[in-house]
Length: 247
Length: 318
Image 1: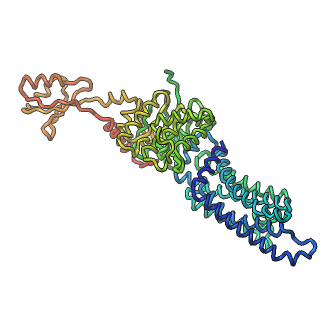
Image 2: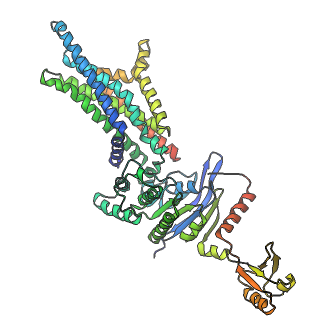
Image 3: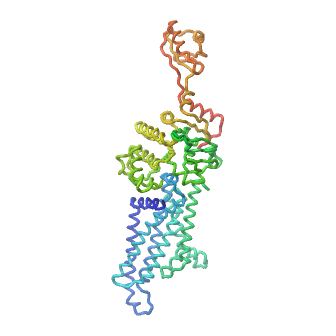
């Protein structure tokens, strides 16, 4: 049932120009940054080549690319998640789901899966970019894999936060702006941490992402993202119940 | 035919803040019955429909669908319901077939039953030749039919239709009404409307709801009896005195109307029409018109809803 709802969500996405434009823009931006980082690396190689223990091509290209990709995805994810529930409410199609023998949990998980699978497709293309370097250089595939895992986790939390915002309003644009605001705030929280507040730094989405880009996969970081996802999904389910009056 | 009870609604209420949209409604729906839900705008019709179909939780009361409580086991209960809300829940970017296939899968129709279910629903709703077209490009009438197809694709025991003929042309209205009658043969149908002839044309039983309360629940036959005449309209070329008319048996009163006609009141079921005609001929009154006056369902509706409104001065809306 979750897959049925997710399938419809994906289908609707691909039937709208929005999904294609988002994919194209993300791809173009990431492609540009990829080439830029490769270029910087090539300029630096003669100088850092002599230093022992110098950062390799993976650390110099893959890590910055994935870091930039996360920012690009932060910008576009609210646009993809905004319609999930609010559009159904705005166009009054929600009764179809509510009168079908489907639980609220299945509705939310289906919606989440649909948009998450779409984001995974974008990630697949971004993750494949540095692999093209394999034809002429050696990559640290462990570092690459840690970065991909980080991207998957951070994008999952983007999606769940966007979904929660979408359950709160019947206006997709409001959901997009709210989702964008929350994501950006969580992203930059760690800059407040520089002035001494450890708690804010700890809550920041970014501070749990950076270790993975350095190849450090810590279970606390993984759990942090899983907690964000689960919390947002649970609040979304609850929000549907509240709207329905079954609370 | 087994007349098993499909829906049992027990003292159902819904409050929005201090406002009572629906206030203590109880009724039943049996298989093979088309129940007309009638009421002025804002009387609580849509709220009731949404509660029956699990789109809105009641503040008080119980709803059982086919014996299953919709609050205790929502998934099991909803499997027996097909619902067409006031605004059909259509995805405009889908084709009719894609959309109906999705609806069928939401209702857990297995893959190999799907093609059959799709064919039946399309054929019953007259959607045979538009299966490949985008829903957004269809006319309002066709969209409404897709909405009904969506409600019956899983062959539910109960079909709930909220104002299904709004915005349709007369031909389409006739087709949809025929479809509703047909559905009423094997399913239980609840039809909400504020169009009175629609109820007379399609329903077995009528419930009138006003200010969130049931003010009338009766079958159409009984209602028609209630609508029966207790007066005649009479036009005579050479009218006698009223006293001459009053001498005729069963005539209780004779009022002269402005247009030269008389309204003759009589006890219900005892029409003096034959006697009147006889007298008119014998005494040369020149009988021109003699018509039993029908009270329409509309009159009864007006009477009930306005009576209720005057006794209950608080304005309420749903």
